[in-house]
Length: 388
Image (cartoon, rainbow, N blue to C red; front, side, top):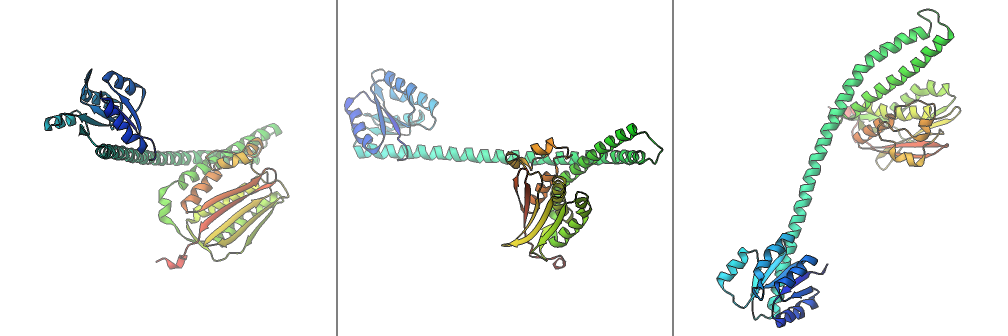
C-alpha cells in the first residue's frame, strides 16, 4: 500500500474492536478504536480518517449520527455500519444518511476485509476523479488565461504600432529641419548654438531609433507573418548585409568578415524578418566593439540545420545579465553605464523573428572579451522556384 489508511472503529463491544484490529492491522491499516460517541468525536477532532466502522446502538447515542460530522470534514470518507439488527429498512436508512455499506454481526474476517477494501477503493476512485477534474479545470483556466494574454499582447502590439507610426513623421521632420540648421544651410551660428543643436540632433536620432524599433517589434509579433514564409537563400543575404555594414565598420577600423562553408541553403522565413535578425546582430556587434576589433560571421550546416554565428571582440555581457537579454527594453549593466545609446529592443526583435521562423537563438559571452550570438534555423526542403 502506498500510504497507511486510517480507520476508526466505533463499537461498544470490546470483542468487535479487537476483532477489527486483528483483521486489519496486519494488512497495514492504522486502526483507532472508540467505545462511545463522545470518544469517537474526540478522535474526529484530532485525526483525519479514510474510513469509519460505526456500530448502530451505543450507550450514548447512534453511530449513524456520526456520518454527518465525518462527511463535513471529508466528503469522500467511507462510512460502514456495524449492526446486529440487519434489515432492509436499516440498510435504506443507513444509505440515506450517507453510509457506503453495512456489516451484520457476527461477521468473519474475510467479510470485513472485503467490505473495507471495496470501500477504500471507492474512496480512491472518488479522490482520483476529483483530482483529474481539478487538473482539467486548471488546464481550462490556463487556456483562457493564455488566450486573454494573447489578445492583450495583440492589442498592445497594435497600439504600439499605431503610436509609433504617428510619432515617426513629426520626429523625422523635426530631425530634418534640425540638420538643416546644424549644417549651416539656414545661416551661420555661433559655437554654443551649434553644440546645443548637435546634442538635440543626437537625442532626436535616439528617438527615431526607438520609434523604428517599436514599429519593428510590433511587426515581429504580428501573426500574419507565419502566412508569408517563403524559401530564402541565406548566403546572398549575409553577403549583402556585410557589404551594407562595411562603411560603418571601417569608420571604427573594425575587421568585418564572412566565413561560409554552406552555400545554396534556404530557410522558410520572410525576407524582411531574416534581414532584421542579422542586421540587428551585426549592428550590435559593431556598436559594442571598440576600435580595431574584429567581427566574424560564420555560416555552416549541421544535421539539417543552418547555423549563423556573429562573433565580436567587444565589451561582452555580464553573466547574470545573459538570461534577460531577450526582454523588451533590457540593457546589460555595462551597456547602460557606457556612453553608447541603445533602446534595449534589438535583441527582443531578433528573438521574436527567430521564434517565428522555428529556430533557436544562443549566446556565449565573456565580459571585456566579446560575444557570440548563434542563430540556428531549419533548412527548407523547397526552393523559391518550387513554389507555384
